Structure formats: C-alpha cells, structure tokens
Length: 114
Image (cartoon, rainbow, N blue to C red; front, top):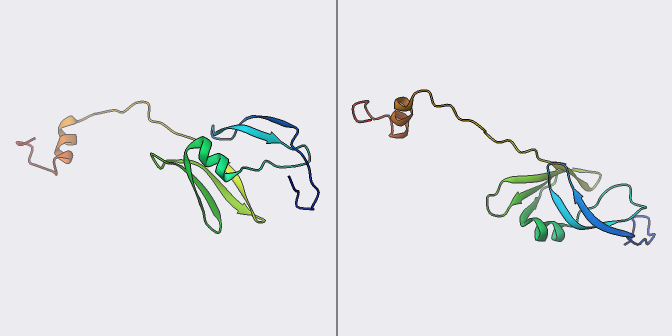
C-alpha cells in the first residue's frame, strides 16, 4: 500500500471490525503506520449489500433493499470521515381511540360509515 508521502507499507494483520452504529466489516487490513482507518468502497458495497453516494460534502451509505441509512461520512481535507447512524425502533404503540383512527384511514368518512 502506498502512503500519501510516497512510502510503501504492508498490512501485517487481517480481521473483523465493528464501526459506530453497528456496521460490521470482515477482512479488514491493519497497517501500523496509518493513523486512521480507510474503507474501500467496493469492499463495503460487496459485504454490506449497500449503495454508496458521494456529494461534494457528504458520503451516504444506504441498504440496497430498504434504502435505509446505514452510514454517512462528512468530507474534510479531501477525505470522507465516517459517522455511524444509530437506529431507533418503536417498541410500543398506544391506541386510544380506534374509531377516530379508522375515521382518518377511511378518508374522514362519517362516523356512521366507520
């Protein structure tokens, strides 16, 4: 691997890594002289089955099927710095008035029809 200063270095280990937000990557190479982690876009798209989109300021990673956001990166000094996305899920849904709910679902039909 070539470093920005032209020096050539070798990866000395290979393993698995879990990024912020739970994104898991396999076959990650460890290069001792690097002070940051580099992601290879083809490896990311192959392993995570995702789509990666780049703009002048952002890098966005989405699941291929659901198009949900699984990761993002912000561009600084010519590199996109990864930021994980925390997932939120609803555990409980409270239904107070089912009549009003069906009234809305049916296009605000009269209450006699509902």
